[in-house]
Structure formats: structure tokens, C-alpha cells
Amino acid sequence: MATTPQVKVGANATPGAGTRHGPFSLLPYLFVLPHLIFFAAFLGYPFFYGIYISLFNFDFLRPEQRPFVGAENYLALFQRGSIPFTDFWRAMINTGEFVLYSVPPLVIVALLLAVLLNGNYPGRNLFRGLFFAPYALSVTVAALLWWWIFQPQGGMINHLINSVGLGERQWLSEMPWAWVAITVATIWWTIGFNTVIFLAALQEISASLYEAASIDGANPIQQFFYITIPMLRPVLIFVLTITLLASANLFGQPYIMTKGGPVQQTESVMMRIYQEGILENRMGSAAAMSVLVAFILLILTTLNFKVFGSGDNQQ
Image (cartoon, rainbow, N blue to C red):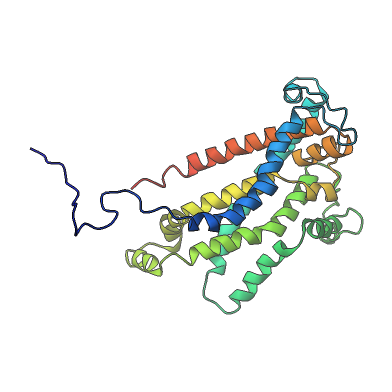
């Protein structure tokens, strides 16, 4: 017959024995408090205030005329034929295209660069700095630099392709070249950040794993797929998530390089929200767009963790 373990009680009993938790401590919460204040002030409050604005026909210039419209701003985004519907979903499709163009190279190429930069050779720190340096630039500087490089008249790219006998391209005013220009500028600007994250993770992998695999006859490619990739799985999920969110928040590059053209074919959803709320003074509609985009990104992030993180807890 099974017996239930008894908790020792008496003079020699250890304080707190038989309880799941020790005495309450306020210290951990004090460490979290500064970030919590920052989060509440700059993320939490704007988010909930945005939901509040989306329920009104909001006008910053005329506070006395803000009629409550409920879900009308949201419904307009799903009413085919309405102006918000057409503009919003066109911008969403444009943003989706850019995500497909930019996320794979920003993850795959960054990982390959990190593997190369993780080697033991002279000058590797110089190369690491060179790859990361563009990320220190602001989006304005990076976009203006590539706007000049892709200029149809006098731009460096057209000069180079002319020198080898290829025809000029209208990189900033024709499709699909406008997306090519924006994607190249984005990859050059931001790939260093992902590379550094992968590089830090690679340096945490024990060299003994590769030595054992080499003794067993595994070549470098097999070691990459059977050691490096599995060991980097959590970091891969993190990099994929932040890259997806960053690409979905595209704004500065098309705003500076193409102005959303040609014919709004490179207008991102963030540009549409800016146009709707700031330039056209329809803050309620812009706030509804923002909330809907946040909800879509939340779903995509959750699916990302579900699909790519499904094997994390498997033994």
C-alpha cells in the first residue's frame, strides 16, 4: 500500500519546508519597474489610445467635433469599393510582397555571412565591423545613398551596366525595378544586425561537437545542417520574427526612394497609414488600420512560433 510522504515538523524542521514558494520579495519587481514604466508610457498607452481613436471620427484640429462611430472605421476596411478598403489592402499587398522579397535573404544570407565571419583568419574583426557598419546609419541616410546610386541619369548602377553593354533601367519609376532597388537598399542597411546575432550564437556552440562529427566522417555541409542549424533553432526563430516585423513596418525606404510610386505600387501599409492620418486628417480610419495591422502581425508572430518552434520541447 502506497504511503503519502510526510512533511517533517519539529525543532529541526527547515524553515519553509513543505511549501512551494519562499517568502515574497519585492526586489525582482523593482528591477522590472523601469522597463514596465517605459513600456506603459511609450507602448501600452499609445496602443490603447489608438484603439480609442479608431472608434471616433477623430480630428486633432477640432476637438469639439469628434463623433463616436463605433466599428464604422473597421467596417470600411472590409467594404469592397470604399476608398479605405482599396487603399489599405493595396498597401497590404505591397507590404506582403516586400516581406517575401526581403525576409529570406535577410535571414539566410545573414546566417551564411555569420558562418564565414566565425572563421579563424587574419582581419576577421575588420570584416565584422564592415558588415555591421551600415546598420549604424539612419534610414534617411541609407535610403538617400541608394536613391542616388539607383538614379536613372548619372546613377552608379546604370553607369556600371552601361559599361558592360546592358541597357539602362528606370530603377525608381518602373516595376519590378523599384522593388529591387528598395530591397537591395534594405538588405545592405540591415543585414549586419542579423549577422551579428547569428555570429554571437555560433560562438556559443561547442567546438567539440564539430570535432566529434568530423571524426565520424561528417563533411562541413553535413555539420552545418545537423549541428549548426539545430543548435541555432531558438536564435533562428528570434531573427525570423524580428525581421518579419521590421519588414512589415517598411516606411522610410519607399518614402524617400520612390514616394510610393510608380502609381502607388511601392506604397507600404505604414505609408498608407501616414497618408490617411497625417496628410488627409482621417485619424480614426488611420488608427483602425494600425490596430488591424497590429492584429495581423500578432497572428503571424504566433504562427511563426507555432510552426518553427514546434520542436523546441521535443526530446
